Structure formats: structure tokens, C-alpha cells
Length: 609
Ligand code: 0X9
Ligand code: CA
Ligand code: ZN
Ligand code: CA
Image 1 (cartoon, rainbow, N blue to C red):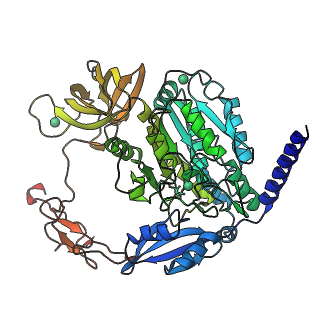
Image 2: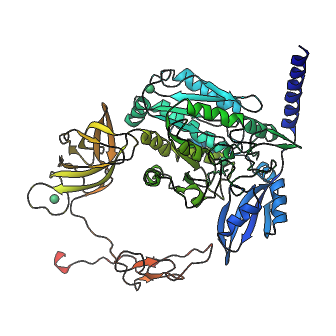
């Protein structure tokens, strides 16, 4: 009994001390520019300053500069390293606090970009607090009980907060035989846009089920799991120190002793954990402290146990910022998974709307060990292999960790298609790879005319992880200015994962009412598992095209070449191409235009007049 009381006292003591620390002042974070002679100097820098994360290397003068955010501790490490550096923002939280508050106009402008109703502004600089996130999850469950579960705790944080998971699917409370997908956010406490991006897409799925065929298909045929706050202690710590947003705490809140706190959850996963000091740190005060052992943290244990209890095939671990989409391996540059081609093809498709740079994480950003993606992909014994990515949401210089309020919704919206694409990828995912329109009546004249019968030859590629069977395709139009008498369905076809199929002779007739010019709206309708999906064929020309401008880029005489434009012949389409800097690199921050000297020369044959 005495033992129990002692244990209880210890527990109470621990709780009191942790709440005392929660009120403690947050450490100071600075923006720092480190001078590098070569771009490759980043590796040496990362070895000398193990807390380095989120580095952006820019060209400057004849060398390079690495822009990064450092805590006081890691800044001291940099000072001792011998690298030349400059502190550009001494106190980032103070700089954030000094920003003028968002105006009603800015908030309205953000909302105007929204394609959902349920997602709006929270009370922390526009971001939802931890409790507000939970209220949103409860609101979803109350409004869409047939599509989303109540929140389920998958474990507790270091300080004892629940880690909440919800699932979106048809029959959400039943474990059905459907491909499983996982979305997480807020591994890092100072990256609230990660959580905003995930909640926004959840509302998009819930609100458009039953009306949007694509959303309906995905909700019916996938099981989509969401853990929007993976590091609640760090997030609540930021709420406490900076209630209006702008808190820079990154790690969880483990008490490391010696007045040092926190493990970087994204260095604590068990695959290649602690491989070297280049991708994580053994120093507890470092921002990238990997913890005392693999999966030492209750937060990573909880998500590990959850993932091992399921058959998750595809994962997005949302972070911010840098407009990137990163995939394994992350532990070493130049080392690729056997699925590199799959990662590359689907990453290109995922980024088709937001244009994020994608690629192997250590090549594109920097090497890290013990990150989430390497474990989801690399651990294939205790659970199936899962394709896992880290999207880094937001622009480098202008958005940062706490984007302005009018950026929250646009940044979430620009990742909606990527989120849906991840869900597609986990099962069958037919996409149009190429197509050709063939005139089928009379003498072909190279273009479609109103009233003309034609046929499409189509190459469909299955970018998804599962095959499909008994699908059918036909040509339709989604544009009244491009009326199409829908053709007959093709014969049923099947398509293995990562394979292509050619479907020839998809006949259709262009209506006589078709308007001349470049028209959008020609599309393929694919019937799959009883659902009808539309895939656009992009824009087609109707009627005789009129060339208004033509230049084969073989000379620059008709052009004002500004400072430096010229012709290049290496790696271009023949004969030559216009190039902004035909011989080498151009300086930073230079606006250089190529402008036609004569505006429009309209030539007319005298016989017309
Ligand atoms: O350093 C991280 O954990 C992530 N960047 S962040 O600025 N959000 O902290 C990137 C991890 C991606 N993985 C690798 N680069 N290996
Ligand atoms: Ca289901
Ligand atoms: Zn992060
Ligand atoms: Ca024709």
C-alpha cells in the first residue's frame, strides 16, 4: 500500500512538474542564413549542426546560402561550428506576433477559395486549437454518421492526451475488405497547416458524397483513416506560450532531464533509427533528438501499433513547408526503393494541380533517419508494405510555419486533389495516358468538324496498387458547346496494377451545334464497380484552325532579347529554342524578358478585298 501511495505521489509530482513546464517560456527560435561555398556544403553543415532541419539552400553571389530555423541550442552549435552565418530574424515568435492581425477582407478572401462549408477559421491565428480540432471531428460524426466514425483513441501522448483517429468510408464502423489509406498531421507541433490541410479534405469527402461521383466512389471503395494531431503535447505547448499562433515548438514534450524537453517524433520511428548523426541527433536538446531508442515515444508507439493492426497501403504524413512531396528512402541520398518507378509515376500525378517538387526525400531535401515514411514503406514484416509520402505544404519564403490567415484555405485546397489521388492509388486507379482522335468518315482533313463522326483510340494506365476487371469506356462530353452523341461502350476490359491497355475505336459523333474553336469537355466515361467516372481529354480544336502566331525559334531577329536571351541548341526541340541564359547561369533576382519587336503583323491576300 505504501508503495502505491509513493507511486501516486510520484505521478502527481510528474503531472505538476509537467504543467509547470507547460507554462515555461518557450525557447527562442531564429531564422539564420549560413554561407556555403558549394551546394554540397549542406552535408558538412548538417554533420556539424545536428539540430538542422528544414533547410532551404539558395544561390547567392558566387556561392550558396542555407536558410534555416534554429533554436537557441542549435544556434550555439552553429556558432561553434566555424561556418559563417547571419541571424536574419532573431526571434521568430516575436516577429510573428508583430505581424498585423488578419483583416476581415483577408479572412473573406481565404474563405472565397474554399470548396467546403464545414472548414473555417480557428482561434489560434486562424488555426484550430487542439480542442477545436476535436470539436470539428465531433461535428463531422454528428452530421455524417453514415460516413465517419466517432473519434477513437489509439493511445496517449507523453503528457497523457489521447491521440484521436477517425475513419471515413461507407459503413465506417465495419471493417470491410477495402484498400486502407492513412493521413496524419502535426508530427511537428509548429506545423498547423498540416492539420488544416487534412481536415479540409475530410470535409470535402463528407460534403460531396452522393453528388460527386469520384468522392462517392472513393468513400464507397476505400477505408480512409485520419490522425490529424499526432503530437498534441507539442501543439498544446504552442497554444499555451503563443495563444494567437506563432509558437515554434517542434518536438513532443518528453522530459529529457537537465531542463531539456522533447523528442522529434519524425526521428523516432524504428526503420534505420539512429543510423548516423547526419539525419538525427543523439543530443536531447537538439531539435532533431531521436529519443533514447526506436519507438521510445508513446506517440510513435501508438501510431505504430495502429498501423500494425491494419493493412494500410498508402500514407500521407503532412508537414510544412516548402511545396514538396517527398518519398522514401529518406535515410540516404541516392538510395532508391525497388518501387522507385511507382513512386515517381504516382507522385507526378499527385502533384499535377499544385506543382510541388517531388522525389526521393534525401535527394530533394536532406537525409533523415527514423522518419515515418521509411518505416511505413520499409517495415514489411509486422505489417504490409505501405507507400508513404511527406507533403511539405506552403511556400518557403512567404508562408513559413504559420501562414497568414488568407493562405490557410488556399493551401489546403491545393492539396485536395493530391489527397484524393492517394486514395485512388491504394486501389485501382485508371488514368488516361494518351489518346488520338481519328476521323472515320470521308476524306480526313486533320481536324474535327461539326457533325463529323470520329473515334478515339485511348491508352489507359492503371497507376493504382490493385487491378481492375470488367470496366468499360465510352466517349462523352461535359460541355454543351461541344455536343457529342455518346458512343457505345467498349467491350469490358481488365487492367493489372501498373499496366496499360489500348482501347481502339471508341466511336462518337460531334453534334452539328458544336462551336468552332478550342473547346474543353471531351471526356471518357469509365464504368468501374458500378460507378461512372469521368476522365477529361483536355481541349480539342473544332473546325479549321487559324494560326495566329508561329515562330520556330531558329532566329531572334524579330525579338527584343532583353539582357541575355538567345538561342540554345543543347537539349532542345529542333532546330533551336529560345533560352533565357544560353551560356551558363544568370544572376539572382533579375527580371529578364523576351519581347516581340513587332506586335502583330496581319497579312492579307489582295484577292480577298
Ligand atoms: O525534417 C523533417 O522531419 C521533415 N521536414 S520538416 O521541416 N517538416 O521538419 C522532412 C522529413 C522528410 N524526410 C526526409 N527528408 N528524409
Ligand atoms: Ca467501407
Ligand atoms: Zn515537420
Ligand atoms: Ca474533319
